[in-house]
Length: 123
Image 1 (cartoon, rainbow, N blue to C red):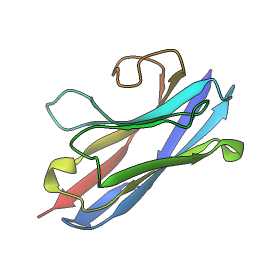
Image 2: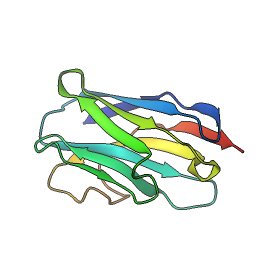
Image 3: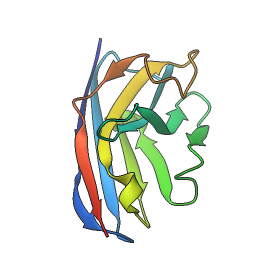
């Protein structure tokens, strides 16, 4: 229903910044919620940040609050994640997600998913 493509991952030194982008295509509208999740090797997927288009409300995991910022452009169906003050523990594959606005924003097993983009933070 919704196709998602992530970009912007890479290797960065601790304390540095990266900006991830997610381009959505297909049936998209203001009823969707979109966000970012991540999964480190051998660990479970976890919620990072999300946005509900209808209200503009944003949500962040405690581990990234104050360092990461999620934003988007409705007309372009694009969501970005600005990541500042990166830490080695931020190293993971980051996945873009889209789901119905009525669903929980932090659930890790709902909606449509992108292929993922690797973020590696060195000490």
